[in-house]
Amino acid sequence: MDLTDILYEKNDGIAKITINRPAVYNAFRAQTIQQLIWAFRDAWDDLRIGAVILTGAGEKAFCVGGDQKEKGNEGGYDYSGGLGGGIGLEIESLHQVIRNIPKPVIAAVNGFAIGGGHVLHVICDLTIAADTAKFGQSGPKVGSYDAGFGSAYLARIVGEKKAREIWYLCEQYTAEECREMGLVNKVVPANELQQAAQEWAEKILQKSPTAIQMLKYSFNADSANIQGISQLAMGSLAMFYNTPESNEGKEAFLEKRPVNFNKFRG
Ligand SMILES: CC(C)(COP(=O)(O)OP(=O)(O)OC[C@H]1O[C@@H](n2cnc3c(N)ncnc32)[C@H](O)[C@@H]1OP(=O)(O)O)[C@@H](O)C(=O)NCCC(=O)NCCSC(=O)CCC(=O)c1ccccc1C(=O)O
Image 1: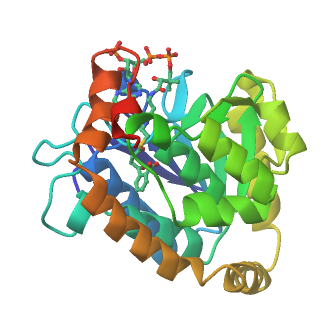
Image 2: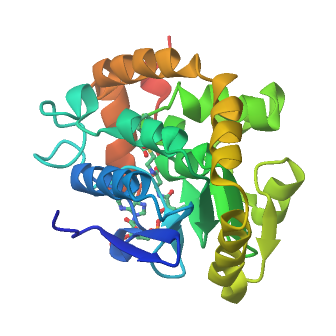
């Protein structure tokens, strides 16, 4: 596969996947998602690999979700057709491969983790964050939502009240605040982030691969029902995208103006 949107390397039992679109803060489009899925499947298939690190290129962002500049464009997202189905992104498949790959996935969050990018770290097994990283959901601000793993699984991690706050208010949280709410495992100085992720991956490699694999399956089993909710959520999102209400969110972001959802109330 031609890796235009990600970097992928494998060294000494550790696979490292880097979302590589720094000009748009590592926002993803359809091909980014396809390449991420390809890389996770390669790491799954390679029996020498015992842990995967997911990170973002540059210092600004881990990932800021769907690329608003490509939304509605052919090959962007919200473009009907192909494997992406209704919203034009194989986001459900990506969530599934991160959850189901029988090896721990460590998110090394180097900057903004916002929107669909935030959901990616939520789904990873472990999160190590730079002390400069910022976290949050933005869907309701830009006419979108992840009513599957992005909300239901988040609530299991931080509790119902906090998860509702995160989604309803769309505020940003520091790495330390996220560590306190159990959403981040460890916070390190930004220049030590990649080394810290590497060290945790190396520690995992010293453990029994079968034990780790079965533990991951066990942790996953308790939240497996969210898969069905995710399918419903993506189906509803496909119907919501391209409505005037959803478009108002996208257009306000692209035009760098305040959003006005008042006309859709009442
Ligand atoms: C991340 C910000 C808070 C950073 O703010 P700031 O430091 O002020 O920098 P900016 O000047 O805003 O941004 C720098 C540069 O990056 C471009 N950019 C940032 N985000 C995006 C983006 N998402 N798409 C495209 N481009 C982006 C920005 O335009 C600037 O470039 P210029 O050339 O100067 O214009 C802030 O940028 C921010 O809030 N960004 C938007 C975050 C967002 O709303 N993301 C989309 C969330 S919705 C989503 O991800 C849908 C897809 C998805 O994952 C999904 C799938 C299925 C179900 C649900 C979801 C879901 O809703 O999550």
